[in-house]
Length: 298
Image (cartoon, rainbow, N blue to C red; front, side, top):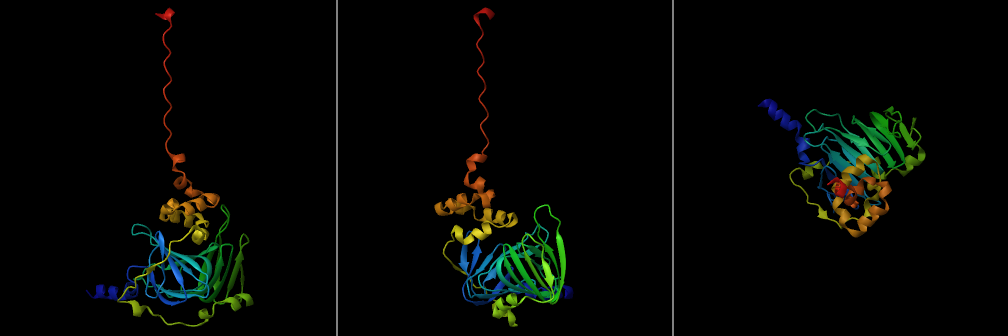
């Protein structure tokens, strides 16, 4: 009984975020959550779910407190997707930063907590480890400063290329522009330090206790158009394919469908959804008529 009580107490930080991956605990400005086939307005107390895409407006700051006790802060004009494996799969949680500013503070992992979040971007993957990192990402470039701790970073290369892994220590500054490999310096570049969101420089308190006993219902936002999600639909295949299944009903909307067709080269996996007739089994050929017997053969 005592061991059961101890396990429950250790899992309390996870339970505080209820069923989701975490919760929004600070919101300054406007942000949207793309969820399922639509989107909702972000708000303090709204909990994240697997598959959510967080999109911040210019001049917005968001703090999320996640189920593994890590804290993610997003700056302006930032796009991040969260994912989690199903109950029958190997435990896996990741946040994919497509573009924008992210500060991720990760504490030492406790066994009773949910699996830690892997940090991903178009150019690298970073397994969870106790650290504080600041990242600025675009689809073709990345800059990362390691404030504290140590991390292992695995660069993504072209298909068939050898994977490159780097180990960073506190104070290291990593930068890369695709397709070149990244470089590491002993200090952040002056432009990176100058552009960093001011809110990233402050140590903000955790606020999950305010939402421990209540869930905030997100309000619906207007439906999204193709242009709103084009950066995701035209990203790497591991991102595009799940979105194709989630958003396939959007192919019935005339404007969205036309945009999908016009940009089909960027996401060819939509072809069977847009043109299912091309993939239907072909009718078997009709049997050839049997030649009638000639009079001489009778």
